[in-house]
Amino acid sequence: MFENLSERLGGVFDRLTKQGALSEDDVKTALREVRVALLEADVSLPVARDFVKAIQDKATGQAVTKSITPGQQVVKIVHDELVHVLTGEGDPGALKIDNAPAPILMVGLQGSGKTTTTGKLAKRLTEKNGKRVLMASLDIYRPAAQQQLAILGTQIGVDTLPIVAGESAVQIAKRAKQQATLGGYDVYMLDTAGRLHIDETLMQEVEDVRNAVNPRETLLVVDGLTGQVAVEVAEEFDAKVGITGVVLTRMDGDGRGGAALSMRAVTGKPIRFVGLGEKMDALDTFEPDRIAGRILGMGDIVALVEKAQETIEAAQAERMMKRFQKGQFNMNDLKSQLEQMIKMGGMEGIMGMMPGMGKMAKQAQGAGMDDKVLTRQIALIQSMTKKERANPALLQASRKKRIAKGAGLEVSDLNKLLKMQRQMGDMMKKMGKGGMLKQAMKGMF
Ligand code: GDP
Image (tube, rainbow, N blue to C red; front, side, top):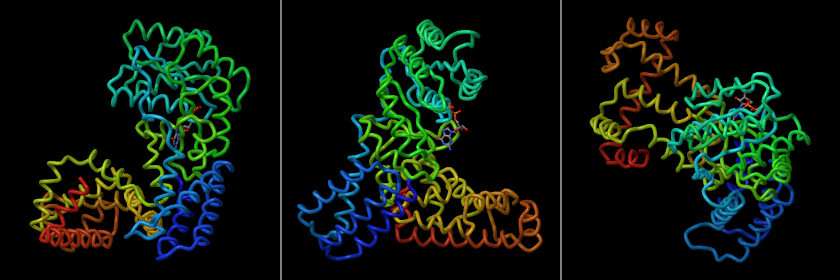
């Protein structure tokens, strides 16, 4: 997400931060470029204008802090302003679901990802918040829409309201409420019908449902790739039925990102979650600080650390460190490192989160260093015997041939892998001696 915007801004600020002293003209030129970059990312004109003006005002009056360059100072101001523009009130992930059963109404256009998001959110509420959730589809128009939700429910282990043919949306909503009350559910989620465009009948139906259940949260699901349109849709839904927040989907795609920046400024409604893929766990709370970091291309170390924390047990890390310090780094270690990389979002995911690495991730991909390479390397290791994994020095020509064949690859691929294992082992040993390994791993885990 935000690729183009991030690249454009990155370019502007790269130039700025390299200069020791900034003239007023430098800042003006940079801000003009920022404004163009925002407009190209489909940020609405008034928002872009206000944004640039706020930065200009703050940058002009500010005393230059010692030890950082004026350019760096501007970057900080821009970062803070981005956070400001993106921030709503309170915690985006904290839904009002205290009085059980709490109704959550999911609204949006057809194809925006409403049903998928309903499932993702139900899963999240169940697993992260320990809530008992009931889902119901109110889509009586699209054939099999109700079945789609039922199947999704089975997949993620969340109950769905039994389907009764011939009911109206309001009748289903009322039945969901009843069932949620009788069944002791904490939350019931109503996945309303979407249309291709906003129309009166659709709005009326959503209004009727809203009046019937009085939802605690009404979340609008919009496609983040549609930029300005997403913001317009949000304005219309809010005016007609009232929404409490927005979920931006498809933020995994390389959309222009403008919707995220304009949403709160134009509609006054906070973005609560972002959809980051088709899988059921590809939903994140919307964290302005983190998103601002990504937009600016200055990296997101917080996310890197968090992901690493989630995926690696501290004890395992400690054990590994001790072995690495002694220079023991075999194929099993390499395999778990490679698997770790895939878990953390692959090459692109990891590099994208490190400052200044966004561009490198792209180059790496161009050079064939993508996730496929990681999977192939793991396949090679899997094709080794236990002994070979523990002691790669055993690998002579005939063994190499067998292993490469087993993984459907060439011996040259295996040689590359061996070189990598040796280099990583050496590096770990060196780092271990200087105490740097401990330092590096502390930062990671
Ligand atoms: P609905 O008509 O609004 O209920 O839309 P669906 O939930 O059926 O989603 C439409 C399509 O978008 C499906 O293929 C989903 O897998 C896909 N989709 C939903 N959310 C996301 C997302 O965040 N990222 C990506 N890449 N695809 C998504």
